[in-house]
Image (cartoon, rainbow, N blue to C red; front, side, top):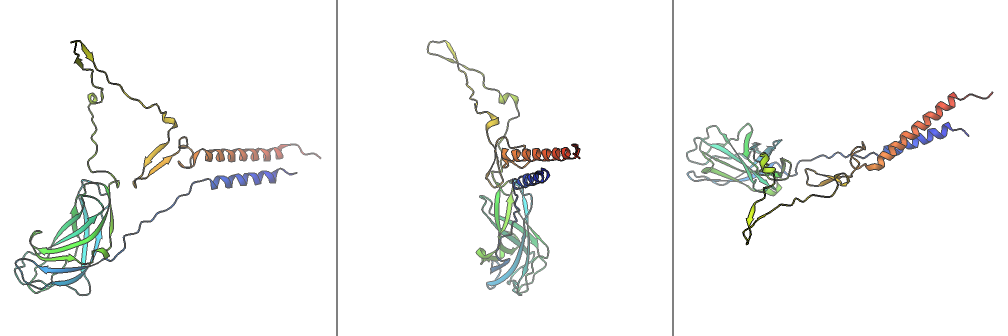
Length: 294
């Protein structure tokens, strides 16, 4: 019986077992929200001007910021262009100093509902076309907590100030519009961090305070500290991911080289493969070095 083919087959089987024990990784792709970029507006004249109600269609593109955090002002980019020649016609009245006020509707994060931006417009004549800004309008807002918000194009107004629009345009197809995901912070928690004390005296236990007893003799009150008797080296390590799920790492499996889910079994397979490899190498050397019979 020849030993060399048997050793080669054993080593190959051990290597295949080690490869199949390695954890698999998956690649996740995030697609933008579905829907249309064309916003249908109904525009009505405001106070101080006269005109008819108009229907226009504007293609709106929103650009979401990266690295947004609670309590910090963020900027959403807004770009708009008329579709199918449905340009807005200016009403009759005084239109000097006309500006565009663009809005975005925000949902899914409590207390974070809208963003607003303003842009100057060229001189507009009564009864003439009302242009849209050629560049990007910056919509600004400040979230108050972390989370993943859904952003849609909102209303647009034209006027000299945000509270006195001369033309008001409301969205008519909100549910059909494309939504943009906006991630804020770690997608969980509030903007206000939990305060921590840096005063060493604050971490010391309170001193015993004598209290008066009915007999007049002082009685000292003591505080009892409660400790956890569970050993740290036998508990499982847990970590909370950004999605709120708990990733569990079995105890004793940190140094396996195959990730927390590999566990002690992966180390046994790796050690077994190394032992078989060493045995095979020793057998080959012994076959070459032993004296041959003539």
